[in-house]
Image (cartoon, rainbow, N blue to C red; front, side, top):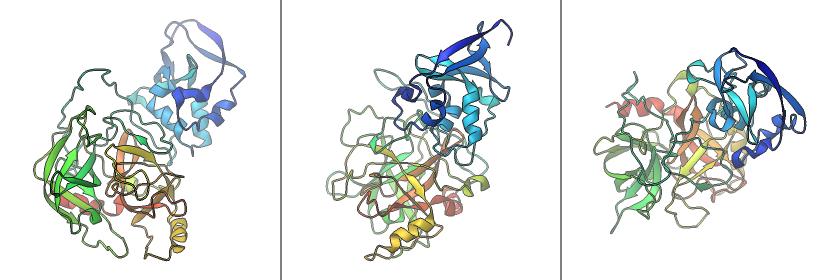
Length: 401
């Protein structure tokens, strides 16, 4: 950059107001700046252009609009190196919100720790009227899986407790309908992984009369939610061959739709963690997302609106100790399951088969499938999820047929 460089003095205030972010992990970092006079140098002839700490070209924008840096800010377990990178990226303010030098997508070079969970960049939504839908074929990769997977409609901030989801937040969410006297009975969830297959829990298939799968819906009890949902008949279903109902192990299955789905803004697949890097990722202390149409409390009716939440992964060792106290059931905690919970947050009745989702490099990946729990959000026992990385080969071999 060329031009006259001036020194501007900013009073750092209300950093943690970041557009009412529900979880303000950034406070510790920016508290060091609060009530202090900080000097920043930047070019005044074009203050939208900047250089990142890695000397790459970037744009000085609100941290809320910079997905790579915002995802670091939200990560509760970020490293000192990442803290310093955030501080060194600061380039001004937009009202009370900090601005950062955000690298252009082709130039991203940020020190990301293995525990960082990036979230997709926000997309502009229409403010009124009907919702335009953009279709996309996307193609497939060398493994036969969709290239256009894991792209959500907007940046999802940290979710504290459960809250209603918005349209296009989770475009792979599937609602499984079972044969009933009148309309379908919605009792399980799932996640679209290809144009014709949905991953769900094996116990959502065993002995059940699956009828249809609904995609792209927000509230199945109304047509006023502006959702462009579709219902597709179920052609067939299969459970993992070694599913053990008694021990509640390998609780995963596949549903094949009668015809293929055309991907668009409302309906698209989630990615599978198929690479060696993604399979070997340590999930302990991460905070994945869950979503579903299940009950909001134990012994309550399934509700019609899609909800989202975040849960914290617990180590399997601690999880096994927790469930060892449970005398009334046979529970096996091994490497094929993930344990996760947060205070007052859990998957519940009707959420079974739904996804446990972790973002990585601007895409969401299906890391878990809701299996079972104790009484919904019981603080003594975390929820149990089938660990998808243990079943990726089986999934891919069957969806490729």
